[in-house]
Each structure stands twice: as structure tokens, then as C-alpha cells.
Length: 330
Image 1 (cartoon, rainbow, N blue to C red):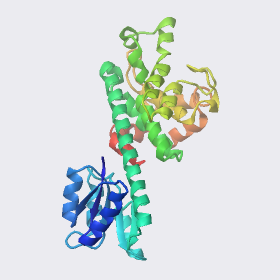
Image 2: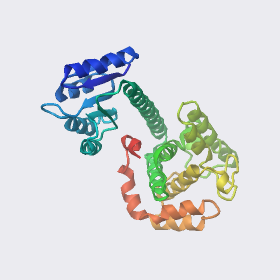
Image 3: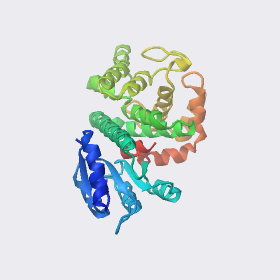
Image 4: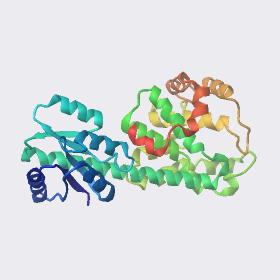
């Protein structure tokens, strides 16, 4: 169980806050200086840090900045404890990365709700990291099976995320979009190798089998808590603006926006990379094809957003532009 770390050089303050929290069922850890705080955060399950600003040695700002700069601790919420009305202290705290503030003397009626809110945030972030790690593992498993789509999912996720940035999409939607791009083809784990790796054109029957992969992928995502929106993206990424796509034949805005973005990103990457059934075309040729299919296969607004970026530069940079660890910062 994650604990509350109370950091204060004043023993009375430490023990008073600890007693209040322990009485309400929140286990605590205690530190009397900044160096001890950093050591405990790296070795214990800390869910939130209650950090006094004025301490000898490392002060609260330095400790907070160090925690936020360390990948091992940067997602642990930090609540700075400052003097009443000290606006400058709060500004410096924000610059150091503090998540919340409490004023001295600490109000017992405010302390517990603030701490519990921070603990909930920490718990949700932990769940999110687990879901994203699972998504990355599933994507890697598919790519290990199909060498021709090596890094395809990662590129689609990056193209989609950059397009979303041009469309003003932020926060949870953009994180779900990234995961949708990463997992859009995960349903192909249910497609026989003889079809998935066939070097020539597919027969009608084989193509009908391929058309089942969006539903297979959506079912996989639906089985994982936290991937509901991602499942919808996966199911709908082969729908078309004119309603002739699959598996549901949805037209125009009946297909969710995030799925329409992945559709454009997927098509662009498929056109510009070598596959068993075709050689990749140039970035310019792929952009021309997106324009020709604007309003038939693809959402015009999404195509415009994709092309509003410097596409050649984006294509050159996208492979290493985003990693899974960056997604939480959207």
C-alpha cells in the first residue's frame, strides 16, 4: 500500500501530521531532511510527499525539483507546505513541479482530503502505466510475428499523434489515440500466417478473413480495463468516409474522430513502406493519394490537418519522435 511521506525538520510538525493521517487510515513515513526524503522515495512505495519548504541543507524546492527530474519518482505527487499567504513560495513551487500546496499552520480538515486526492491520482497513474505497458507488449508481439510491419504500429501511433496536435487534441484523447495507433492491427494475431504473409494478392475469401481483424482487435482491447476508447479506434480504423469500409460500413462522422485520424496515418505509412504485395512510394506520391482520396476514403478535415504539417520532415523524424514514456505528458 502506497504511503504518505511527511518531510519536515520540525519533529512536532512531522508527528502531528502523521497522527492525523494515521488516525484516518493513511499509513505514513517520516523524514527530517531533503536527502532522507529522496532516499525514501527511491526505496519505498511512496504515494504522495508532504514536503516542507524551509529546511536546512536541501530545501523543499530543490527536493521537489529533484523528484520531478528523476524518471523513477517524477509521477509521485508532491504537496508543498508553505507559510500562509506566501505567494512567492507558491510560484517557486510551481516552477519546481509541485502538484499542490498546503499552508501553515496545516488545517486538519484540509490535510486528509488533499492527501487522499493526491493518492487517488497516483493510483490512477499507476493503472495507466500498466495499461500502456500492456499495449506496448501486445504491439511488439504482433510485430515479432509479421516482419513486414516492423515498427509500422509505432509509426502510425506517431503520425496520428502529430496530426492530433495540429487539430488541438490534447490530454486523455491524445493518449487514447496513441494507443489506438499502436494497437490498430492487433487483431491480426487471429489471422492465419498463410494469409497474413501471403506475398501476392488475396482472394475474395482471404480478404474476408483479413476484414475480421478490426473486430478481433477490438475484442482484445475490450477485455482490458481502461482500453474502451482504444477498442473503438481499433474496430473502426478501416471504415471509410463514403461508407464503403469495414466492418460496419460507417459513413462520415459516424466513424469516431480518433479512428478517422488513425485511418489516415495507417494509409500513409502503408503507402510509403515496402510490403509483400507492393513497393513503397515516395512521401510526395503518398500525399497526392491522400488528396485524391479526400472526401471518399478519408475525412477531409483529417487529411488537411495531416498535410498541414511538414510531411517530409515528419516522416523523417517520426520513427523515434515519441516513446511510450512520453505519452503521459500529452
